Image 1 (cartoon, rainbow, N blue to C red):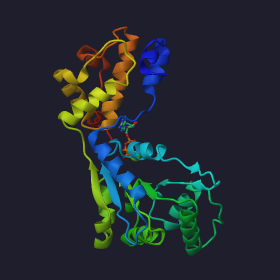
Image 2: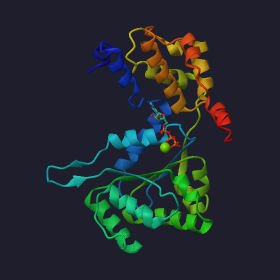
Image 3: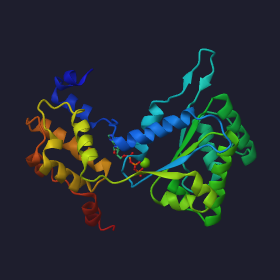
Image 4: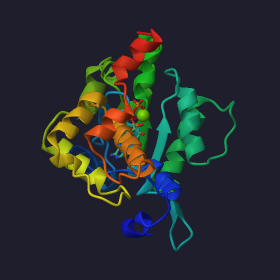
Length: 289
Ligand SMILES: Nc1ncnc2c1ncn2[C@@H]1O[C@H](COP(=O)(O)OP(=O)(O)OP(=O)(O)O)[C@@H](O)[C@H]1O
Ligand SMILES: [Mg+2]
């Protein structure tokens, strides 16, 4: 169904449509997606070119990784071979290599004994990468590594380095700024994971074109031209405090309000009506910090 058809649906259906997750591209995301694409095609090498996606919480890191994953889902070759171009896992809650290997094997649906020694599981992973033509592994929430002793952190990061050595495939880490500390335990590791930042949004051309792109996904019956309304676009940015998750939520809620009120377009009075509390304000209300 195209957007014009969605616009003709009833209010509740249009609201459900708005509330769904969707990934809207923006220049920085495009650049990172291109880099990920390059890594997929990169030949096996002893020192594969890895990198790290770094950004504040609620700023689109996981959404970006999942978008890439969705575009590179497992498939079956005519020969019957199964191909897993990308393995996406979360880092364990603590720097625990054993747990991490479990996650990787589970992602590839490889059966193994939980009691199998680390070396055995490493061998299984190496085999699986070969068998399923795995091209890239992405590890989200890598800052979790910091919730362990320096020794454990270093052990874990070395484990990751070894993983790229024996699979000969690149590794992409995803995490908050704290993740930089984790890779900083060792100059050799830091040099392998150069950061690619997803910074907080500011009032600029990219922000306005992002607003425009989001507006184009909304099934409202009238144009809002949010990006061309400076007061409105500035206010949305201010209330979002620069987090993409907030920007997207504000606009989605405004769109829902636009439908419920019968206005069919987003404007500054609707934003006032929404009474959005900025994230820092929310923390103050709960008294947690
Ligand atoms: N490009 C995008 N287009 C539309 N929505 C997006 C986009 N990027 C992020 N979002 C939305 O913003 C919210 C936060 O994104 P996400 O979960 O990726 O943040 P994160 O950086 O991984 O946060 P955390 O550090 O807390 O894990 C999600 O609801 C997501 O759907
Ligand atoms: Mg995330």
